[in-house]
Structures are given as C-alpha cells and as structure tokens.
Amino acid sequence: MTTREHIASIPLTADDPTAEASIGGLVRDATSHVSTLVRAEVELAKGEITAEIKKGLKGSVFFIVALTVLCFSLFFLFMTLGFALAEWFDMGYSAGFGLVFALMLLTAVLFAFLGYRKVRKLRAPEKSIAAARDTVAALTQRDSQSRGDDN
Image (cartoon, rainbow, N blue to C red):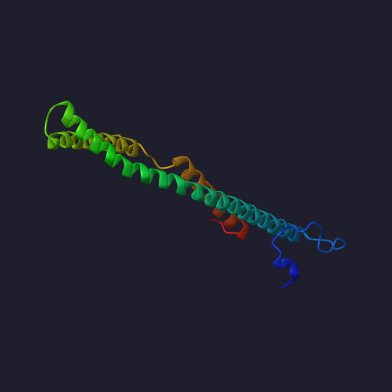
C-alpha cells in the first residue's frame, strides 16, 4: 500500500505527469476521485449535522424542564378550578372535581381524535421511493452493461 491510498483526499497533482495514461486508467482514476469526493462530502455533512443535533439536544433540555414544571403546575390549576366551581355553583367539592375531570377527559378525547385524523392522512414518500428505484435500476443496468452481460 502506498501513502496515497491512506489519504482520503483528491490529489491536486498527477502521480506521474510524464507518463501517458490509458483511457481505462483515466476512467479508473476519475472514478476513484469522484468516489473519494463523495465520501468526503458525506463525512462533512455528517459532521455538521451531528454538531447541530448536539446543540439542539442541549437546548431542548431546557424546554423539557419547562414542560415538566408546567405539567406539575397544571395540577394546582385544576385543583383551583375544582374548588372554584364548587364555590361558584354552590355544590360539593366532589361535584366540582368531577366536572373538572369530565372537562379534562372531553379535551383529551377531542385532541386524540384530531391527532388520529392527522396521522391517518400520512402517506409513504412515493416520489422518493420511485426515484430510489430508478437509481437502483439505472445502476444495475449500467453495471451489467459494463460487464458485458446481455441482461
């Protein structure tokens, strides 16, 4: 193995500028360079995306803490609402809390129904699937032609 095979970059100068290269050698080198370029671009994108995801996760921790505190605070809001309903409508505390429970249950059912309607409308990404199938078909056809197969 030469040192050139260990470096994942496109060479800026020819290996031997005085040598005459065959068409096959030029195609092989071009294919190798394009492959190396694509791999380098994928690694760059992966590194950038990973860094952004880490920053997003660190920021989302604060939102999670805020939502947790809000959820625990809602308990006191519902308690207050239950006591207030019992006082305003001159009924027992159990009736006030029962009414609060019924309102919460109705709200949960409503949002579950709305969520179900939205999820039911989801479809597979047909265009992306078709494009991927076309790419695979083109590459397999090109590969079989380059081998000399008649498939």
